[in-house]
Image (cartoon, rainbow over all chains, first blue to last red; front, side, top):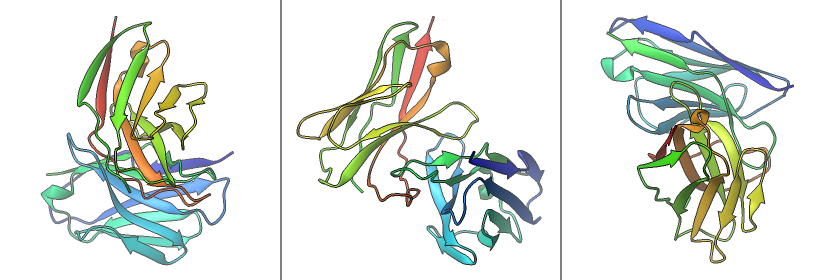
Length: 112
Length: 113
């Protein structure tokens, strides 16, 4: 069966510190992968998507970057976190249907 | 992708049907209507989607008007666990290429005992 996992689930980091959030999918090969962010009280915003290893597209200019070192691994990073980077980060992939997305459990980041 | 309009909030009594409306007056012929919901502190959950025919699955029914300019998501017997934010999204669908979804503010449904 297809599964998606994110970690860590919760993270509290000081301003200026680095960040690494990891997403791994199982039960599928060469999936499209997506990073979304949800700031407090707001809707979801697409940050990055990837159609294959080493292929990253950025949807919005920001302090974050993404990488896809392996087929089923998607990493969200930052060298120096800002207060505005706080939010709920979600990884997602399409399980093979017509446009529906399957989301991970999410990683809640608080930057202090 | 076409823009959607949803009421910001709705209430529903437990056990009754919850009818969530969505307007998408600029929808194109090849765009599908998708519904997701997000329970607090969790990732969004896919509910249902359709093109022009009404659709039903184990979670809900989707009623799309004949002119496709609006739709209604129906939860036939709402429970307290259905309390969530419901998102209506319109987009072109390609097999196995979903993902670039534009989420609006959605409708916050509160199911009350």
